[in-house]
Image 1 (cartoon, rainbow, N blue to C red):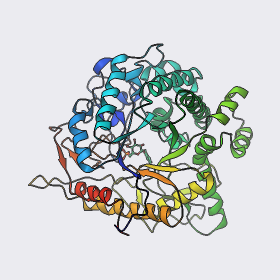
Image 2 (tube, helix red, strand yellow):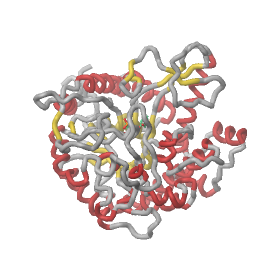
Image 3 (cartoon, rainbow, N blue to C red):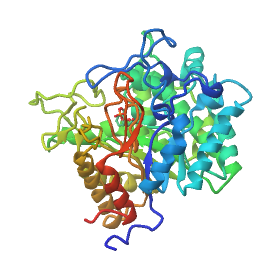
Length: 484
Ligand code: P53
């Protein structure tokens, strides 16, 4: 076999998140989550956050793909695909419907017992995120989300309950999904989904997000400390969105701008991995007059509760420049870390229909950068190509564009492992079965090897069918990699 140098136990898998697949938003005592009040958007129109669930609004996550009820059939397909690992999340509001109860909801706990048993019976290892954009709505509404230190304790209590319960079924855990998405504080959707926060007019968005982010990092550390007490064999990780930002030119200011933009996102993994608030952050808070609240005991928790591995998503790269000769500035990205810096299109790259720039070498690049920075095992827990798929008259779907994207990225991952010596635990491509897009709320921004018959308006039979990429990925797993 050509590729026998990849570790034999390399975790080839697929990834999803509870709110994007399960549906069943009110089943078995589940409480309302922050994802349940997100309307549908599109690649041009942002999703809206509504004040509770309103009549006459369409909420795509309420039904999603009904995985909650159809999981046995779906897991049979995942087994046929050959997955060794399946990454999903636990919907916090199934376990603690409001978030601040003392006792968990047994029906919610029983559901995940059945789901994990079904995966294990099929030789698929569950990889579990504790919080993937789906905290109980009540915690956002009544406590202001992670602004409030009490929410740290609610999270730790939830984490303790599920880690204790599933410790013999789940070995790999991650605390907060893409905790650094919120980094610049200016994206309404990310502040909401990461932290349960709607930034108020009298608040400085950057300051609020630093406080909430730090509270989450403290919550993560405390959960990890608990997990080690419960079972020292568990592997506790963080989950980062790594979008490398390249200097747009060789102008020295562009190098500094790129470094500063990356620093804002690395802030989160710097703390997760090193257990200390980095000096660049302390300086910035001081300079801007931000009052970030933390105690000595919390600093000690950060120090103790560091991660065993770094899970991360990789979809695209960006570029930043200070040289003002570009008209193709990408809107919606603010860069207030460096004078005159702006995020721009990279003329060497193509984009998908949502403007995400396709860059397979960027994956090898970021694997190297992160491994050199932290020297910890890495886990690629999301990567994939969102696209509009075409169902042919005979029902087939020829998604060669998805295969080329994934093939190129796997090739670069293999170079990072085999030539650069980076330690990678596994690769779980995103949206292994079609799901509701997080960013746009669309069903038709598809990532899957398995098609789900449902459209952006919610019409469809929910029937599952294999795309042509299905047999391609099946083969990749069988032969433990791509032929480079
Ligand atoms: P959708 C931005 C950059 C990288 C990853 O995204 C991101 C985002 C947010 O849009 O989110 C992750 O569905 C996230 C998943 C999400 C996936 O990427 O907008 O962890 O929940 O579905 C893909 O195409």
